[in-house]
Length: 417
Image (tube, rainbow, N blue to C red):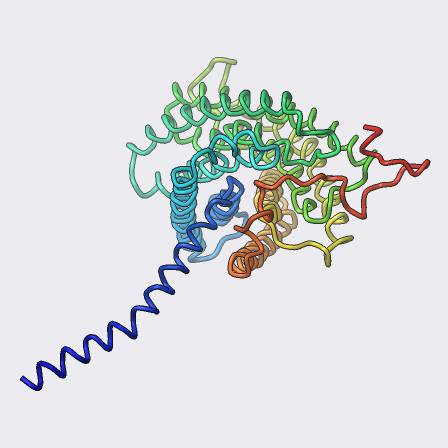
């Protein structure tokens, strides 16, 4: 009996000691879940950049390879699938737990621009199927790839039309707020060309041609809309100067459209099916297409080089004033296209030096992804993001910073726009 009393007393003591710990853990968990109210669409930039890195590390992409490279790429690709799932669960929780946040996120002048990063993440995942899935799974996945391509093609076109309709009619967005992020609504549809370039060569000829034509149309429309956006972007910089320091990492988004267009044109030309004979002898047709694609790609790629250099200069000028935001992943994803296009041109031109430059750029991008990811984790732990007023669901005037360009008469440039 004495032993039972002692045991019961010990159990009550243990419960009394652990109850505060449980309450503290419960309060901590509720606090962290409450922070998900600010879990914006921009969080998809993490799987977007990771998926781009997986494509870059594929043996089929690189000019120089080594044993184990494909395995490293597979690991990164699987990690990307995990991150995409995690982000999707978190943002779904936000929309369910906090009613109205879904509608507000689509209408918000800043956060809404990042809606496209969710489908950009899917573009990397679908393209990764061609590099990592089809070689291991067999012909059934070729059909799945084709179906996913056309679904992605249709959905991203509707998103582009819908988002730009909101963008053009929103009274909250002004020309002085213009950053390359305004190009994000068309970016996912444009990457239909990249998805087609990755998988067209694996399709039967009767299915490959529609995919190539659709991909070329999407890439062309995306590039043309981007050029129109570039006009507003350059005009904004001429009048107001570079964006605010924390928005400058997003300047690398401008590198993406010409880079991905360059590599897509090459990929689509390489994927042109034999035994098609629509334009005559396929051997001659393919040769002509590849020559045109190569010179066109070099022509377009030069624009991405210019925007890359401008973005580097702008970021280095305020390097000590930039704090972490999710747009830091723009240091990675657009430059993935920039790097792959360099490698692709090196292969076609049979230039080991160009491919070596591409390999060096790959190493730098891997290091950059690690750097950004570590800072991402650090920012979450220190409440620099996922906190009220510190995420993309908070509007900030792009002319409200010390680096805005003054006018010759000293007047407020925003009032002269």
